[in-house]
Image 1: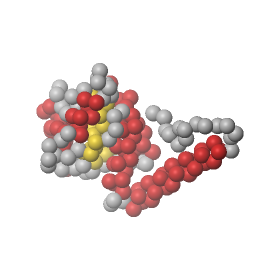
Image 2: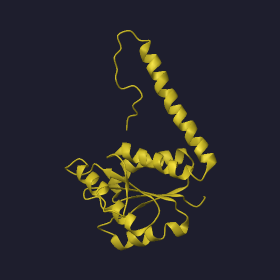
Image 3: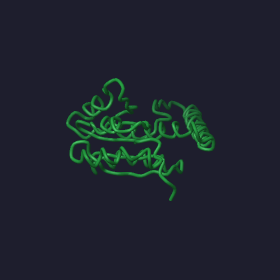
Length: 178
């Protein structure tokens, strides 16, 4: 296996069902990755040690998903210079709003690119990682351009199919279900 370019981490094994969306897309683009469970609160030393070593191992982008207090992405961003993409996970009684605010409200100088709450956010985190990696990889950039073109074609074909139906009024065309 090639050296990983993307690291995908999550705060708990209960986050796997959400973060699988990122894994699925990274695999679709044949990007080497690694996945780990690390907690900003329960394994802070191990998390810091892992993140500090990412750049030296060739990792280019870190995707960090966490629920509840969701400090994982921010702690990671404080320990590395590589881009950190945060995925708030809807695992608490607040349905992810606590995770969103904990991930997005970073102090100046410690940025985290924060995605939407839940599976859609994990999927978009992988798309964002592909975009970042595409900046230096023309072949990947071409595959990403084809991916975008296919997304547009799928929406258009669904709309054309829907337009051909009499009395059909679905407003959810082109929306991927997670």
